Image (cartoon, one colour):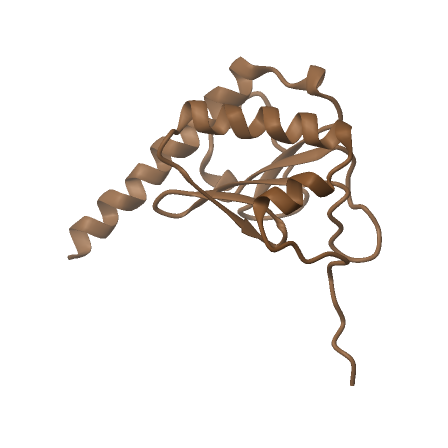
Length: 142
């Protein structure tokens, strides 16, 4: 029986992933990556599910360009900025799409112009602060 693949690509590196992206998605992805590193310089970046994932004590964010499919067709347009602990964020702006999910929330950007840096940075900083609480909890258990 053949194994069903949920993805049509398999990148060996982050650079390979970025080289694969169409220009419009690459511009957005690079801008969001820079914003993440500006807000959290010590964050770890790795390729997971063929897209950039970011973590410190737990998983924090992911960037999912629409051209990197999950399944047979795109599930969104542009680049999805995902918050892995989105359920813990204060979302007074109703900025995050919950999509019926209980934990992972996101916001999709179709163009770079749609990005409000101040707003997004508030969410990034809050996520990093929440992530620091996971570190404190780990230390208390020891």
